Length: 581
Ligand code: PEP
Ligand code: MG
Image 1 (cartoon, protein in one colour):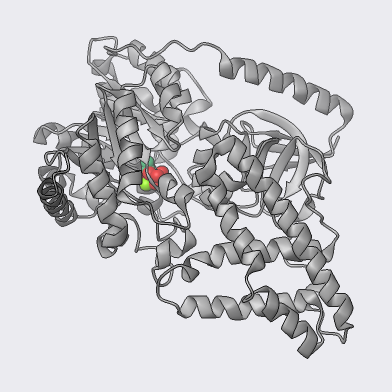
Image 2 (cartoon, rainbow, N blue to C red):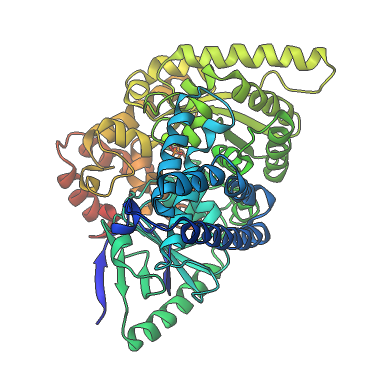
């Protein structure tokens, strides 16, 4: 039997492949290498490494372009430019010649000084590229070391991508033909890597601590994204079994799932809406084929990620939202405005100083009209073509909603004055994902046309546990009474204020929670397209009257464990209630 690792399975499925290491981690003696050295040899080494890194990046870029399109490959374009930038290469050559250090040490020094210069730049192009610089540094260092050669052609696929952690942009960029699974040291079940892996149907296991240091490049392994088990260098029989399981999983994936009926209702006739969470525009078609009642959450940050290094303009927003609105017509398409910044890091959130976790989403957008106004204008114009709605992330007070409404009204005036068609009366909703918003949901609702509960963040902020952390994962508890009470209060506030309330966190996609959520007053769910059929199945067999009685009892419970036990009894399932968020 091979070496077994246990992590958190965050995107179901089975795959076997060879390790494609994204990072080599800090290396030993070579990386400091201050010993006297022979400059000509080091210069040649540097140039060879650059050429190899370039060939590798070009190959990945071409594949990403073929598989995911032009937008996605732009991320890699930036890194190719950096490889040719004299600030990096000429400065490193200069250090090799003058300080007589190894190419690795010279490169590390150059990157360090470049990064400190970038950090002092408040805004703009260069500051956005700290993350790319790190990637390029890692890639060059790997080639300089020669030991962990990642030339994609040197190891034959299928590949399992192995990394310490993956940001959303890296996940998108690295998802290349032949990557059949992802494993990372860090990360949690609601991290964006996990969400994206699910969107792309790629098995993923996170929270494996130091696996990225233990795996050897090209080592074979089996990844089970449901159980979270990773086996390194498995025996041939294990590989054979994994191949059979994968076949079965792929068959099940493509099997016909009954579409959600248009007039979905509970067993006792209460209407329920089931919408789709979308990360990539291509998912809309599949969501509609599954019978989704429109899009309940489009995470527009992926539009920003894929257009990097440029900030998307009004036209780009307009096109994307118009297409989505038309595709789901006459159902709604709820577009969430940019949610980046803070711990959702992306190129230092377009040049904002520092990485203050509090400077995220709407707070960041209100400080950056250059980012936000083109998005609002695009939304106002797209709303002419369908039921396109605006959802504001990380709201903590009514004032933020009013401010967005003021901006929308102002931009609508300006569009009209320029003779551009738009809809000024677009519906505006707030995400309830910060405890402050949940505790004041009765007040917040007065400013909104609808509310959407984001349990992924609500749980992290209510329970003080990082959703991206593997180590504290046990504290990330959707069934904590605090979470359930906030969900109930928000649903009740919406009902009393005459405004619909949806739940769009990952919790909504777990059919083990569907009955409880109905009992807590939720009538709209927004879930990843693959979860639609299962959640619809539970909705149709649930009696709301019974679910409400059950929820009333649950709300008197003081701890998550008793709630999980009671839920397991109620749903007749001892495992699933605790199994996922
Ligand atoms: C949430 O926080 O529950 C949510 C849906 O938003 P995201 O996962 O994008 O933060
Ligand atoms: Mg959120």
